[in-house]
Structures are given as C-alpha cells and as structure tokens.
Image 1 (cartoon, rainbow, N blue to C red):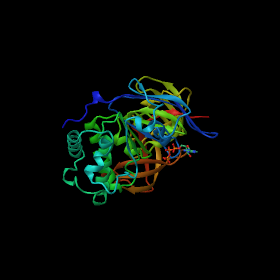
Image 2: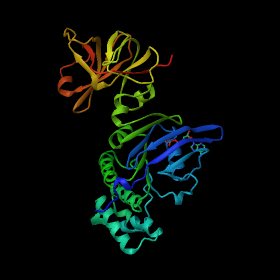
Image 3: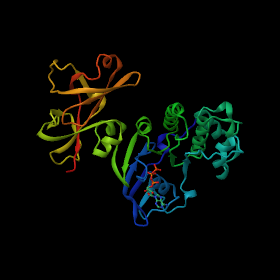
Image 4: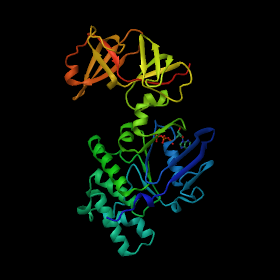
Length: 365
Ligand code: ATP
C-alpha cells in the first residue's frame, strides 16, 4: 500500500482564536499546536465550543480574531473548499445514489485526478478501510459501521492536510461504537494524516487520541495525553469530567518531592503522589479514583493511614463491583474492586478505607 507517511502530513498551528455570537463569547482565546500526523481530540461538555472550533478550522464559520496555519501556510483567509480539509460528519453524509467506489472517488473527480490515479487511490483506501468486497454496493446496502468507513475513506482520499471528524460515532449502537473506535484509530495511524476529532464521550477520547484538548466554557482546560488527563487532571472540572473520581476537601500540610504533598481533612491524613501545577494554595480537592480505593478489614493495620467507613451499596458490573462507602464528615465515596474481592464484603459492614494513589487539584474558596 502506498499511503502517505507522517512526513507528508502537515502540522497545524491555531493561534489566539476568538469567536462571539452577539454578546456571547463562544471561544475566548484558543491556541493549539498539532503535530504532523497527530490524532487530537476536542473533548468537553455540550456548549463548550468544540463544534465552533471545528467550523472555524474548516472555514464554515469565520473567527473574530486569530490565525490558523497548516505548516507555514496561513489558511484562515481561504474559503472552505480551498483549505484541503477532509470532513467526516455525524450522519456520514454519503451520496445515496453512488456506490462505495463512487463515493470514495468523489473528491478525486472534483480535483480532476486521472482515471488511473483515481483507481489506484480508491483501491488503496478500500484496502485500508477493509471494504474491498463491497465496492459496488450503495450506502443503503451497508451497515452503519461500514458506511462510517466509507465516509472516512472519502475524507482521506485526496490526501488532505487535515481530517476533521465531527462526533462520527454518535449514530452507532454501543457495541459497534467500541469496534469502530478502534478501526478509526488504526486507519488514522496507518494513513498518518493530521486529525482532529470532536466528542463529548470521554471513553472515546481516552481510547483514540494521541492528545486530548479538554474544553470548558469556550476555553482550554487542559491539553495532554489520555494518561495525563486521567492520572493528573489540572482542575476540578477535569477531575470530575474525565473518568469517575472521588473528590474530598483537604488542606496541604506538608510539601515533599515523591510523594509530593501531605494533606489533612475530613479524617484524612495522607501523602499525595501528584499535585496539579495549578495548585498555588493549601486548599485543595484530594482526588481518588475508585480503583485506587483499597478496602481492608477494620482491624487490619498497614503502613498507610486509612479511615473507617461503612459500605452502603454494592453495584455489580461483571468483572468489578462498585462499592458505595460512607465516611463520617466526607461525601459518599465510591470504590471499584474486583468481583472476587467484593464478594467478601457485605452491605452494612464497617471497613478500613485506604487510598493507594491520590492527586491534588486547586479548590476555589
Ligand atoms: P455540542 O457537544 O452540544 O455540539 P459544542 O461544544 O460543540 O456542543 P458549540 O456548538 O461550539 O458547542 O457552541 C458553543 C456555544 O456557542 C454554545 O453555547 C452555543 O449555543 C453557541 N453557539 C454556537 N453557534 C451559535 C450561533 N450560530 N449563534 C449563536 N450562538 C451559537
């Protein structure tokens, strides 16, 4: 297969983009550098400005201020059809009367590729998206996942500088989404085209991205790898939005290096492994992931400082069980333990709760 390698992809530079609709500021000051071939996801709740950013990148909406460059080339003055961007929408937007091959070749026809070059490129893409046997079918004769792969092949066909994927999995059922997520990620890695993906689904973002841009109210909250966002959120918003988390009010009482800080609050007295760089004062949220809450018998002693709590509910999930635990003076906490271990714990039981890992984010007074 002769697909473009990453050296042919373009880096994308977005600088100080602002956008208002009337008095409402939808994007405050959005700046981001995307590496060539990188898969970057814009993640955030409804209304945070993901689609507005995507529309500005694609040329469908003009920005009020700021610049966009593909490599050295400034593109934000160009109309949408001259930006060399491949788009994949939520509803796929395939041409219903065209076959798979005709859909994929559409952009190549518009760009006057020769018949030979067109046929070779379509063959490459059919192989990439694993649809070789279905080349002559029309969209109505394909499953949702297959239609999605045609839409991706069509967007990649003309070797765009940037591929934009706008919630492309939201019309698929849960099982298919899991599969198509991996398919899309693999296709993007092989094709190597710089890609921006928009979603409000944090699992999708964690599974697929090289980096995630977490957005909140028209601003970037944090940019990092999926591991960065999950294990070291910068803010309370990030700690609550990405993955399940327990947040406890605490105060920093000592500074270390590794572990980084000692905290006290609500019956806690523990050392934290990591602290958000945005923490500047002693008032913090101590964030503990459910899988980092260990449960021991109340009599069991260990090197860590635990706190006593009462199990109030158990939610069976197959391989793991969620355990709701009430600790005096603390909001209800949720632990996630392997089923074999949770089977030995009963509702109403008093247990010793230990935090295996905890992280601090700033707490506004
Ligand atoms: P969703 O996940 O629901 O699609 P989003 O993060 O993509 O949300 P945007 O569509 O970018 O959010 O919208 C950001 C904010 O700007 C929202 O409050 C929205 O109501 C507002 N907005 C977007 N387009 C317009 C418009 N044309 N006129 C007025 N307000 C708009």
